[in-house]
Length: 332
Image (cartoon, rainbow, N blue to C red; front, side):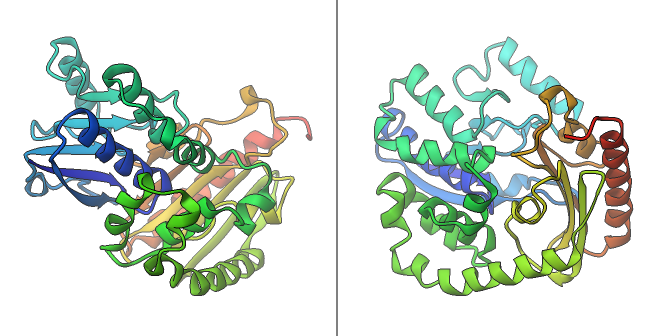
């Protein structure tokens, strides 16, 4: 049996979810299956290509819902899991009539898709996930921004942080598919010692220092909200905690950046902000207005790479909205 696993690309949780799904499927569903991996990214326009669903089974993990009948498995935890109301209706109908029973799973209350998938695999299918506790632990930390400090997030001493850097930065389409099986085969400290990973780290760590300097030069903080525009530098990724490392008293950060396939508006909130939960704005709701999405505390919007003006206009509106909201609250 050939199983195609589609995962959130350039994302630590996406890679971990794909690895855990494969081990779960091999241990609990089909022992002799073969797995192929294909990354999915949020971009303007269609997110899926039906022609890619060529497996005997096709799985999507840590990514938006796809109504195609060719999708056998789906696991997601994002608030913005459904691109359209029609997609949501398809999911609810399939759950109601039993078509998706024990095959499509959704719960936005989980910090990471990896921890959600581990819960389903263990409680519904009897998988022993204890050997994978390190992976599940770090998927929650990385995807939920549960670092003890901005310093820990930006200085990246832990193996999981170094892996996150490589995953978010690599332009080799074969890199993450090669990495995925290793994540559930060995400790993360051994994973980063693999030659094809270790050789990438020195130049990426140097580029990380350059992006830190660039964002320090560009970021403006006003009314608890940071804004920076680095679209004149084509970056395929940067550490999203840099703004809070530079401006610890901030609440929100809006970053405008450009890569080879999109212009991106990143909308985030400081994990260490001194705001009551009820005072925080739901960023997924804001991003959905512009065709994006994410979680309550972090989201993003993707525009075509040649639509920088549209992205900048959206970013400006969001910055103004968040700054106005912050001005209504007492100084923390």
